[in-house]
Image (cartoon, rainbow, N blue to C red; front, side, top):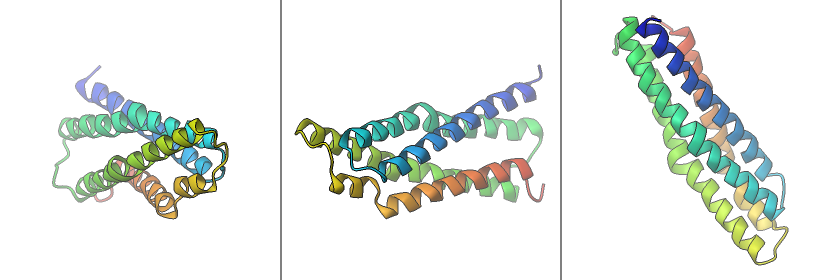
Length: 159
């Protein structure tokens, strides 16, 4: 196998992790907003956190590392517009996840665990916190950014 093929394979493995993690995070985020059960919300929030730590973060950083290495190996230039746009979109999606959505899921999991330990089985306040409209919009925004990133990587407009 050539260096190009190895790098492409590794890049695609990490992209698959990123996409899988985003799918799990999106599904659990939607699920948390549709129930008042403290145990269900806690489970979904913890699953979101696991997806973040074991799929989204490694996928995002592995994809950008091997993708950057692949750019050089494939003979592209780092000053191409599609590539600059890709880095910008990647940075925005990653920042939303690392600094907003991830911490929110961890807060929701802690709050749900606290309520559950106090004997609360249903909480509309917890459901409202888990399903904050801003978090839903940011989650969908992150999903759109990742889809845009996939389009940029496959279409390479202007290349």
